[in-house]
Image (cartoon, rainbow, N blue to C red; front, side, top):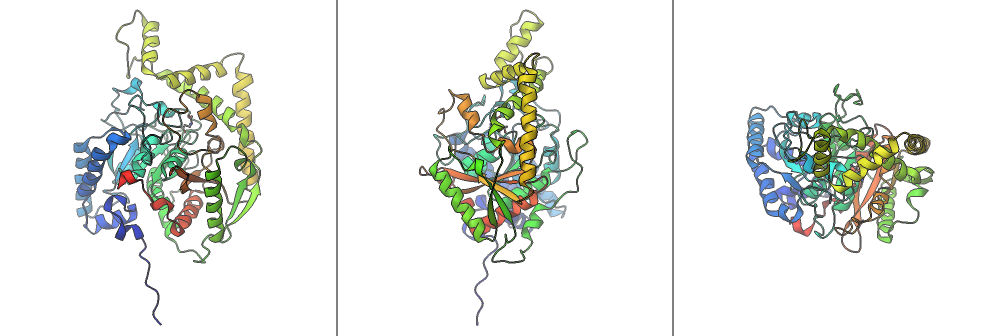
Length: 509
Ligand code: GLN
């Protein structure tokens, strides 16, 4: 009897072009000298040059600097000094400070800011050997869900360039979706990794609050901000996230924990190959499956859950009764913190300064008025209002109480399930400009992602289908604190059995 032919472990390698190859396969190709880091970097730089004018996913690309990093990586590979990402190209959201390079946060305020130091995440990824392709476009100061508020113009969705890529890390998500970079960093304060991942048909993970250092990450709402990872697959996210995490004494909320090798955990064979997720209990919050979700999303999410069951997981209904209050709680807290964090931009030491002013107060007023866009100004005003004497108790304190209730809901829920699943967003990518006149409407679209940040939990979004217009749909998985391995492994098993994550937009051919 002959045994069936062995499946290649990475089906994309044999059939797909180099720009659409998993990071682990790129790693092997670099190690065996099939390809050099300079060749890889050139391939992606050329793709950025050709395709990015239609997407506007990048704010800064410096070919010479990237190629110098790639040459250094090739030397290290030649000497066998190989880190997990040595020679692998990636892109950084322009919210992370990069030494000697423009870091704008997509704001006019920082359009001339060259950081004198690297963010901890950037330094860790340099140490891991990654080669930076550049800085990606985003919502100004990471405030938004569409990447339209950038001083550098909106990012466009690679699946349909008349639509938004989601936000605020829309540039990173679009770059990975169009395969302008194999992996990219992002940040997630209320959904800014998961929601653009879902809108662009890629995988994105936001880890437990405190796992990724916020040092050098330009602050929006410090109690919610967390660095995260984008990749075509959960496996690629695992490799990137592992290299981004690590204790940092310069961030007082950084957690001291032993590093985890997420990718190795994913590679471990399951006890039952036919039912790799046997024993996994997935909770389905009733509140995430109610009204307001489009039929296409409902259908895709239901099919994904059926797939999880086919892989051995079981599902059960759960309740998160306070999750519906996440939007007001989140937007009060986020704006309050933003109003405080953004007070540092005064035009004195760095950033935009108005050309003409009469006195110091006038300089502050004009510099901030010119430097910040409308959405940022709105949030500073609302934030200052909810923190002001007389309104603090009515709004800010109430929001903090809701935050506690929401975290309590999750704590109870995880008493009866391992992971929680639902749609990442109630809608797919909307047309550019469709929500711009109605900020509250846009805030409401964050209903499934913001509770996770309020509780400080890890969350992941992976592709699970398309709507009638051909726009991607994402499934969100939420884990208990420090369950990144469990989240990534579940998504990985799903992706081993399905091909949603292998589809790429026609533009990225
Ligand atoms: N859309 C949310 C907001 O505008 C989340 C943004 C984020 O996660 N950075 O605040």
